[in-house]
Length: 431
Image (cartoon, rainbow, N blue to C red; front, side, top):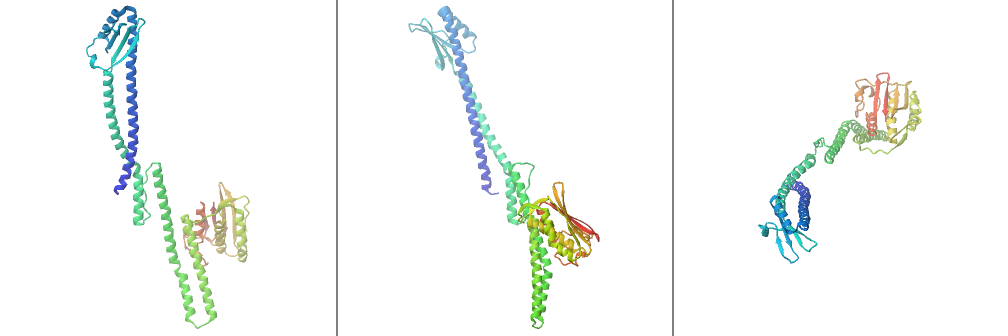
C-alpha cells in the first residue's frame, strides 16, 4: 500500500484525536476553574463567619475578651487567622500571633462597629494555592495521558474502521489487474455502512460474473449451432454456382439462403433475449396486464393452426385476474407454450389453456395430450439448444423453453413442467 494510503488514515486519526483532546482540555479547565472558585468561596465563608463572631465578642466584652478569644482559637483551630483591631484613633492592635504573616498572602474582610472600631480578619491563601498546585499537576498528567490514549486509540479505531475499505480496494485492484470477476470482498458480521458497501459490491460482482458467463455461454452456443445453417448456406450457394446457368435454380437457391438467414437471425435474436433476461438486463415495461386478454389474443392467433391440425383447442376465460409485467413478453411466453403444445400433439388430440388464482399469485396452465417428454429429457428441456429425440422430427431451434423460463424468472415468477411420455404435458407459469 502506498504512503498516501497510510497518510489519509493518519490525517483522519489526527483530526479525531485533536477534537477529543480539545474537548478533554476544555473539561480539565472547567474542572480546575470550578475547584478554584469552590476553594475561594470556602475561604471567604470562613473569614466572614469569624469576622461576625469576633465583632460580637468585641461588642460584648471589649478588647480584652476579643484577645482572649483569638488566643484560644489560635491554639485549637486547624487554620490560623490574622486578626487586627483599629481604634477610632487609628491605633492598630494585632491580636493574633504575628509570626510568618509578613511573607504570606492574605485574603481579608473588615467590619466597623458602632463605636467606630474596625475589626479586620485575614486568612492565608497558601493552603489553597498548594491544593491548586497539586490539582494542576494531576490535571496536567491526566491531559498528557488523554493525548497519548487519544492518538493510540484513534489510530487503532481508524485502522479497524478502514479495514473494510482496504479489503474493498484490494479486491477492486485485483479485478482490474486480472480481469477475473470471481474475486469477492471478505465481509464481516457487522451491519455498518462500510460492510453494507462491501456486500453491495459483491452483489455487483455476482451480477457482472453472471452476465459474462451468460454471454460466454451464448457465444459458445451460437458458435456451435451456427455451423449447420452456415454449412447449408454455403452448400446451397456452391450447388447453384456449380451447375449450368439457370435463373429458376438460382432463384430457388437464393430463397433457401434467405430462409436459412432468417433462421440464423432468429436464433441470434432469441439467444440475445435469453441472455438479457437471465442477466437482468432485459428492459421490461411493467404494467397491470389482464390475464384474460393475454389468453384470448393467443387463442385467436393459434386457433386456425389448431383447426388445421384437427386439434380440440380450448382457451378458458379468466375474468378478474391480472399480473404486473411486460405485456409483450408475457404474450411471448404463452405463445411459445401454446406453439409447443400444438406442435407436439398429434391430430385428434387436445390443447387446453387456463388460468386461476393461487393464493397471492396467478397460475397459467397450458396442457396437451401430445407425445409427452421422456423422464430422462425432462430436466434438460430448459437448456439452450437442447432437443430430445422425440422432438427432432419437428422443426425448431431448441430455444423456446429457454426463452420462456428466462422471461418468467425476469418477472420474478416460476415455470414448471409435468409430463408422461405418450400421455401429454402440462406447463405451469406462476406469476
